[in-house]
Length: 331
Ligand SMILES: NC(=O)c1ccc[n+]([C@@H]2O[C@H](COP(=O)([O-])OP(=O)(O)OC[C@H]3O[C@@H](n4cnc5c(N)ncnc54)[C@H](OP(=O)(O)O)[C@@H]3O)[C@@H](O)[C@H]2O)c1
Figure 1: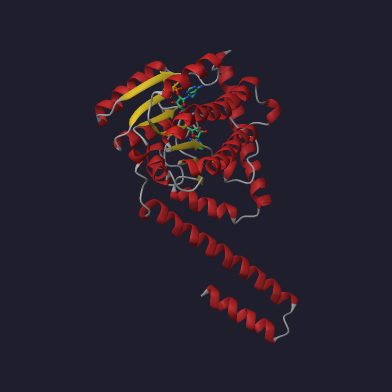
Figure 2 (figure 1 turned 60 degrees about the vertical axis):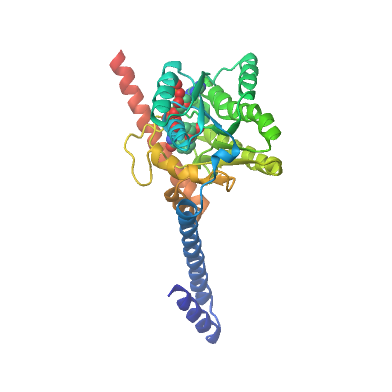
């Protein structure tokens, strides 16, 4: 329909000597057609990647999976899905009691071996990094999931973001992702096989800009580049890297409790994301987010940025009012 209308308009325009008006109509139809085709191809690709293309056989890559930030949200959902596939789990997170409970729960549920190490990635000493590297040497690691991450407490202008948040963003999102990858690489290179998945974010890889989340988005854009470069660097050595960059997922970090189609639960998101491992170096991990990515990229960046700034500004105001109220209650 759209195609035949375009052809009709084109021939009509040529016959009548193609006025400026006709060119305008043609240009609009061309843009409309291109966007429709691009969206349709994204939707078809999503169906293929999520439902038709086979999942990688993780066991061909080794016997253990290492997951950081393993006791909650996306990390915990990953532990469950990987254990379901028979991988042994090495879980790393901050709170030892939660790690113990998660290990027990997962090994009882799936009958797989589990181990853990409590690490606070916001302040890892050189000695702890060395200990981590030495410990991980002993394991036949198929997959590292660099999941641990932190964000702002709420949307904020950079000059109001406190020092601790900036330090944590760099230590947890940037340093931990880089050092954990460096820790598993020697073994993977020796075995000539391995997979590394890192949690980026749609705010760093899908949106043209994420105002009032600048430093968080920056750390996630770092993860995208790190991943893409390493995927080229090590592919010939049998190691694949992937940045999984979701839009919103209903977890503690986002403070969104109720999941919906566009904001899936961690379990729903991971069920899709795990099937993408070993393929493209960048994915949103979830078919609905892929379609949203398609729609977002067909909107002019300037309109999207203005909209993003306005809505982030409103959410910032709401968060500041809530904070003020809470402070008032304490006084
Ligand atoms: N949720 C989203 O919408 C979304 C969107 C895009 C990207 N992501 C990315 O996905 C990843 C996981 O996010 P999530 O929403 O699942 O987070 P979450 O529900 O808040 O879970 C965070 C996990 O990380 C651990 N953790 C936090 N700080 C730590 C630290 N300093 N040292 C060690 N472990 C620490 C927590 O352990 P404790 O329980 O011990 O605190 C918990 O296991 C992050 O990298 C995030 O940036 C999330």
